[in-house]
Image 1 (cartoon, rainbow, N blue to C red):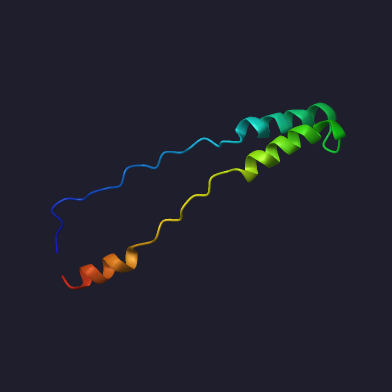
Image 2: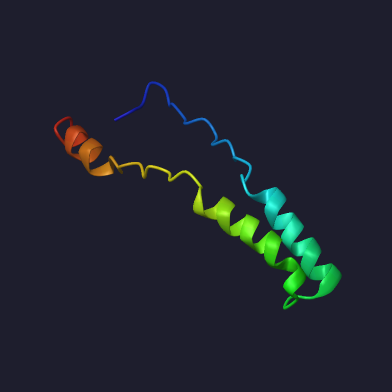
Length: 75
């Protein structure tokens, strides 16, 4: 069995994290005043709010079994 041509999938685009600014502010606050400092509570709350409101990604269904069953008829 020979393939006439081979198709490849395009590379996935890496998306930027939506909470990267809040995470940076949190780390910057920790380095400036310490991890257990009460001054960082506002930035921690902002980060928690951002993480809570993230959109959920839909998990793609794996179609390997479907394609194997479909191609088995041709073998």
